[in-house]
Length: 164
Image (cartoon, rainbow, N blue to C red; front, side):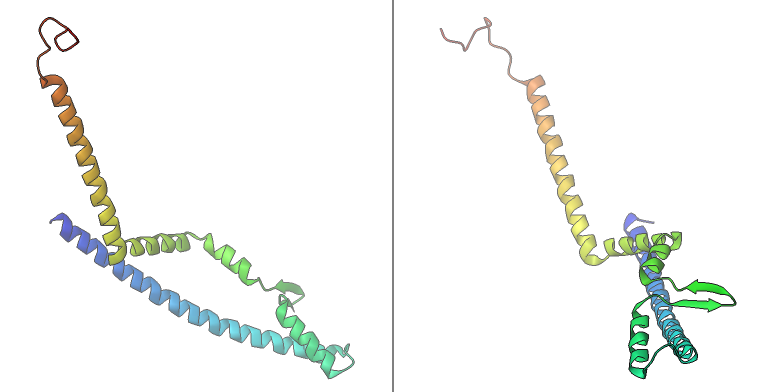
């Protein structure tokens, strides 16, 4: 199998992996949005029930104002005597970015980016220029070495070209 065929197969495999990762990510994002909306509705309903039960607020206007402020803050629930605080978006991102699978997906995305035609052509151009520059440098060094060893014989008398 030639090198070009091996590169083509590797590129195809990485493209399939990238597409599969994209499909999985889109499905997970949709599920997360649905779950987040459902949790938010449940939390708002639970908080409204709490406000109605507590009767601490004087007017309905103050109740809706407190509810709006509550949506901006973190969600705190008491379930079976235990206080449960819903993590913030930043905390979820920080926790998930340290997982090995996420890091592997980031590396796979980088490799997929490097194998895109525009990136691949740019990288190949850089490699070609570097190869040619090194080849020219080797040829210059070889010519200089050949001149040093096979140069003209030294002048007779030891001082042939120096002033008379």
